[in-house]
Amino acid sequence: MGRSPCCDKLGLKKGPWTQEEDQKLLAYIEEHGHGSWRSLPEKAGLHRCGKSCRLRWTNYLRPDIKRGKFNLQEEQTIIQLHALLGNRWSAIATHLPKRTDNEIKNYWNTHLKKRLVKMGIDPVTHKPKNETPLSSLGLSKNASILSHMAQWESARLEAEARLARESKILHYQTKPSSHHHGFTHKTLSTTWICKTNQGKLNTLTFFNGPEQQFDLFTSNQNKNKSLP
DNA sequence: AAACTATACAACCGCTATACT
DNA sequence: TAGTATAGCGGTTGTATAGTT
Image (tube, rainbow, N blue to C red; front, side, top):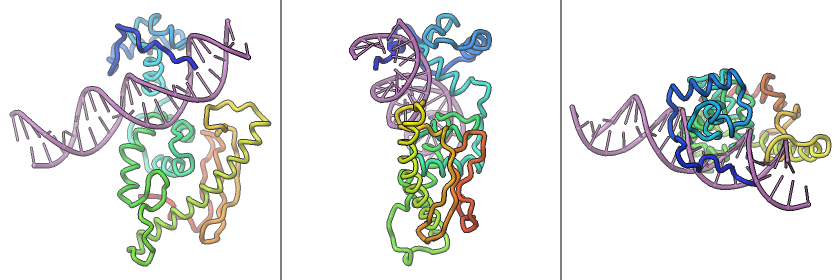
């Protein structure tokens, strides 16, 4: 309900962090842990609000963060998970160890989204933008894209229905720990069969946890699943 | 070399959910 | 039970840098 007023206080610094500030924050957390973020800045000798400190820590200073370029595998994972989850960056981040939701979100917005648009795929729906009939398209490239999209759409719809059912079950079985999206991604561990538009069957293993294998589309006819 | 534009990403804002009193 | 503080989330903005004219 109540919103933190900490950032509104006068005299608190905003904008890019300096090395000195980073060091102060790091040193404090290494020694004491972050504890209450609200009281941390004063204790650490920083003229920042607690929220700013928390973001700096979680998105940049945390030692278990992998920085630098995303590799192909990571890119594919993001695209695939985005097709299923939409802009649920924190949920996507749980399947990319050492990457932050902020980093993934930025990478999606600056790289991947544009790439899909270039390919003629709507980055929101993950469907081809213009519903041009197959026959009028250059088949080789577009057909594989459309095939890919059809498979994903099929899986996505199946997943949505499944998750809707599971979330109800989980609601009774456990107290949901995650936030407003209504279900706990981390607790789901499911493999099921989904049917593509071509009537083929795929197995889909879903969200076993960050350190376990994320294995979508294990059937043979889906070797073309990867996007360039 | 300077001005302008595009890109990348760090950081902030405002919201909701949850924990606590 | 209601009110408040805090954490976490996604959207958006600001700024530094690279590229182009």
